[in-house]
Every structure is written in C-alpha cells, then in structure tokens.
Image (tube, rainbow, N blue to C red; front, side):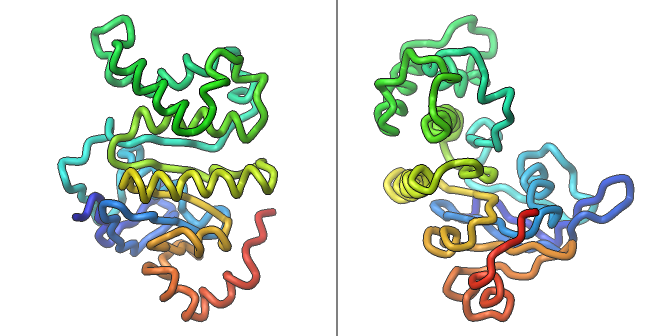
Length: 238
C-alpha cells in the first residue's frame, strides 16, 4: 500500500525552481533513500512531504490514513543540540510531545514505551545520563529513540550518520535495517552514503541538476550510467 505518492512535483523559492518533475511512491515497509549532491533539492522534498513546503506544481498524496503525528523525524544535529542540558529519558519522552495536547504530563503508557525504545536501542543504561555527556553514536541513538516514539508508520532520517566514526556508522545502519524489517516501519532517508544506500535500500530516488535522474530499486540503479558513475565515485560533499 502506498503511503506517499509524488506526482509531477516541483518546488520553488521566490520563483526560482529548486527541483522539478518528481514522480515516485513510497510503499509501506519501504527503505526509501533520497540521494544527490548538496543543493539538489533533497531537503526541500523532505519538507514538502512533511507539509512544511507547498509544491509549486504537482501534488503529494498520502494513503493508509497517514497523519503527520505518525511520522518520526531525525534531523542533522547542530552543536547547540549536542550540548543540550537534559537527561536522556527526558529527550526520548519528548517524542510524545504532540500527543499531550491538554495534558500537562506524560502518561504511564508513554513512559513505558520510552523505556522500551531505550531497551531496544541498547541505551537503557544511559537513561539518567545527561545528553551532553554522551558520545556522538550514543546521542544519535537517543535521538533515534525519540523519533521512534513519535513515528508509528514512517521514520524520516536526514543525513543521520554525519560526524559519526566508522564503527558507529555501521552500527547505526544495522539498527535502522533491523527496525525496518522487524517492525515493518517505513524508512525515508536523505543520504550521501552511496555504499550503504545500495546495500540497505529497497528504493532510490536520485536528484541532480534540479530534476529526477533515477527512481527505482538498487539493482536497477547500478545498471544505469548514472548508477555506475556514482556507485564507483560517490559524492564530493565539499
């Protein structure tokens, strides 16, 4: 079942086209990776899917009764976030913030679910630690736990391994893959990491030069000229 469908999508800022001609679908259980050079429109597309940016052309359709509060989002970290003076459990619980509405406190069910996410990601021992005291890999797991509390159907990840050491990168990708397969949680990831994108994804959307270069499976991608080029050379992120 399609959760998200993009039909002839275009996005602009102040009349200037950022990206155009996008056509794709995200099915339930997909591991959907959006790749492309800096400035290709990846983040703009993500904002569009999250209803933070209105398309200048085309439309985004949602299925299976998808609501915004069923989407978890893990953004790139800023230095200010890394130094945030809060305990781990507080941060994970804040994934339920949109559920509070008129309630002043989190309920028992939400607290139990937060505990479960800590256990699932092997960071329960960090529950009462201050977030700023943790390593980069540990911090990213905390933010992932928070996103999992927020997202019931889709998990958005925006360059989630930037700044992590190679071991933490491998562990993080394995975690996401496990969540995708065992929880049937749909993954939408923005990434420059071609090697891992090809290994883990079920679908790839490649953006460049303000347009869509490819949409399909990794097996299809590596048979195309653009896939051969980028799977061998990768990206220049500078």
